[in-house]
Image (tube, rainbow, N blue to C red):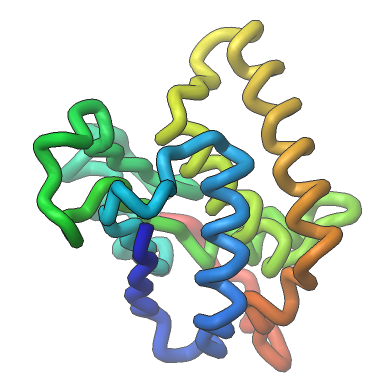
Length: 172
């Protein structure tokens, strides 16, 4: 598994790509995704703001407004992927992470972005959260994966927060 990262947030500090690649690989393994050397697919991470997430949410999912993460998984037929093809693509919203990180107890912008990464990878591994039973399972799996990741990585080193957060703006 190769990881690529598109950071479309010029007003935010860029993630530590080396740490992000390592943390993503561990998270993918913990999510039970096929990351063995025989499968050379790419995980593409795209970090966006609310405006771009609203557009993606409308264009790809048919929903209005912003969201935290959108997951595209093409691993159903891994044999159809050529080496380097995108197997998973995650669109992650930094604005949502900043809002939720400020609201939630024991969280932060950096921790929320890491959680969105985990959430997207778990969706790619077949987890769902559409009904109460599957949602409880998804939350339990998120906690399990996050616990291990937090033993190895400081989210603020992966995703450095802004020095001074901007004034709260209205969500589109």
